[in-house]
Amino acid sequence: MKGWAPIAIAFLIGVLAGAQTPLAPPASPDQVLELLQALPAPPDLKESLAGELTAAMNEQRLTPGVALAFLGEVAELSQAYREDALGILNHALAGGYILDPLLNEALKGLRRLGRPWPEVAGVLKLRIRLLDATQQVLQWQGVVLMPLGEAQPLPQRAPQPGPPPEAALVLEIAWAIGDFLVAGGSPADAVSMVGKVEERLLRLRGWLLPAELVDHLLAELSPALVRQIAGLALSPERR
Image 1 (spheres, one colour):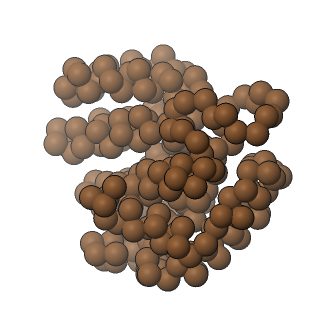
Image 2 (cartoon, rainbow, N blue to C red):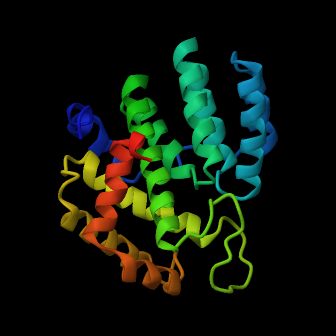
């Protein structure tokens, strides 16, 4: 967990409590895109972000108010940090993930705790690597059959508004492992990580997550699986 321990106590634990609480008033997608275009940033990056943001807001993976608040904070950063923040956002958007928790975490760090951007960026990058690793490992296990941005041919369900349940599953597993790691837990302690994941999924079973999807994952859940996720996230060159 090299590089993360120094910020775990001062920043991460405070950020993680209630990380999914909305931190922004309502806004429209048009307001988000207007602010994006007003930012001093490379045109090609803004073009990519405009398409990804539009898709994420249409698919209800990102609330416009949260996106607008995040971009408002990004506008106050230096040029180098601004481009770093937009690049991080672009990567996360391209993954097809549910993004309100990620951006709310950034807002807590920047607004409430007044942490410098490099610390906030470090947390966001770890969270995104965990999302990437979780999706990849679940694809290998057959729980998520293709990238989240594509239609999932998993159990037949009535169409529901919002992102697919598989996206929520990836988010919750990655968040449970991330909460353990950033609070100072060892990535070698796979048994404890399994316990955190299992506790979280059982709490959400039949509510936020379909019971059959949770049961499928729990049947595959093991110390080896979570160790693989953590290992990929902390050593992404292994992919």
